[in-house]
Length: 573
Image 1 (cartoon, rainbow, N blue to C red):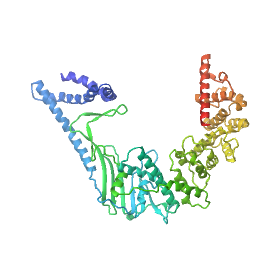
Image 2 (cartoon, rainbow, N blue to C red):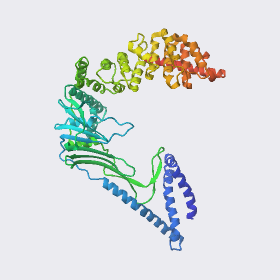
Image 3 (cartoon, rainbow, N blue to C red):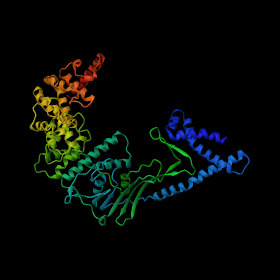
C-alpha cells in the first residue's frame, strides 16, 4: 500500500518543490490547501524512508513492521540533523559573546578613533566628518577624532589654531535621530521640533566655523596616540552568524562597553521542509529557526548604543542660530575680504534646505552663484530648491556657472534650470547666454538651451535652421540633442516659425529622416509642425497613414498632444 501512496506523493512533492508559488496560492485562497501542500514534501520523505527501512525489520506483521520502520525513519530524521544542528549552535554561541554595560557611563577624551564599515550602496561617499565625528568633537576634553572606514582614514580637529585642510561638517543633525530613538517622542510636533533643532545645529556649526573655530581634516594619527576606540562591526556572510556589534575600548585595548545583536539560523532537531516567503521569493528550506541574543524586536542602532554607553549630552544650539547665520552670510557675500572659513557658510546654508527653498531664498542663492570664491553649488541646489520656484533672479548666476563648470552633470542641471524659466526671459540675451547658444553643437549639455532662442521671436528662425543644417550630417548620437533643442524652439515659436515649414516638411518626408530616430521623435516633430501652422490633416505622416481612418486617428493624436503641450505651457508660465 505504501508503494501506491508514494507515487502520487512523490509527484506532488516534485511539483510544489519546483513551483513553490502554488503553496502561496493555497494559503491565499484557502488556508488548508496551503498547509497540505507545505507538509507534502516532508510526509513523502518520511514515508519513503519507512518504505526503504521496512524490508529490514524482522517482523512478519506488516502493520507492526511499518510502525517500527516509521519510528526508525523519525529517529533517522533526528540523527541526520544532530551534527549540523550542533555545529550551527556552536557558531551562534561563539559569536554571541556577552554584552558589557558601562557603569558609570564612559567619558571619552583625548584622541578618539571611530572605526565604522563603509556604507553599503552603489557608490560610497568620500571621507567626511559626519554626525558621529561632530558630536564627539563637541565633547569637553576630546582633542581629535580619527575616522576609519574600509581602507580610508582621516583625523579631524576643531579649534581656532588647528592645522589641516578646512572642511565642513557632513550632516551633523543626523545624530538627533539617535537621540530621538532614546527618548521616543511621538507625533508630528516631535518631528517638526527635531527638524528645527537640526537646522539650528547646522547653523550653529556654520557660525562657529565662520568665527574661527574651524573644522580641519588631516592625515590619520598613529595607533599609539589613540586614547579611545569606538569600533562597529557589521558582519554579513553566507552561512555565518549575522553580527552587529559596537565596542568601546581604552588605549590598552580593554573593552569597556559592548553591545551586540547576533542572529543565526539553526536547523531544527529533526528533519522537515520549511516554507518561507511570498509570491516574489517563495521557497522551501530545511526546517529551522533564527536564534538571537536579543529580544525578538530588538532594533540595533550603533549611534544609539554609542550614546547609551557614553552619556553624550543632546546638542542645544541657540534657537536663533539660523537667523544669525543668514545675516552673517549676507555680510560675508558683500565682503571682498571674507575668509575661506566665512565663505564656507554658503554651502552650509544651502544644506539647511531639503526641497523647500523658495522665492524668499532666491536672492541669496543668486549672490552665491555669482560669487566666484564659492565652489560649484549645483549638487546642493538640486536638493535645496522647491519645485516650480521662479528662478528668474538666478539667470545670470546660472549662465555663469554653466560656462565655468567642468562636470557634465552640473552643466545639465544649470541648463535645465534655465530652460524652465518663464516665457520671454531671454528676449534680451546676455553675452553669457549667447555664449551657451554658440556652444550648442560642440557641448552636448548646451543644446537644450536652443529652445529658449524662441524668446526672441521670428528673427531667430534662420539661426535655428542654420544650426540644424550644421548637424544633419553628424551621427545621431552627436546631433540628437541639437535636433531636439531646435524642435522645442519651433514648438515655442508656433506660427512665428512658419517660414521653416517647407524645409522641415522636406526633411520629414525623406526615406530616413535625419530629424527622427523613433516614432516618438516623429510624433513630436508633427506636433511642432502643427503648432507652426500646418493643419493636422496635412502633416507628413508618411507610412503611418494608409487609410482615412488612419489619418483621422493620427490627426486626433497630434491635436491631443498639442493641447497637452499648450496646457503645460500655461501652467508653467
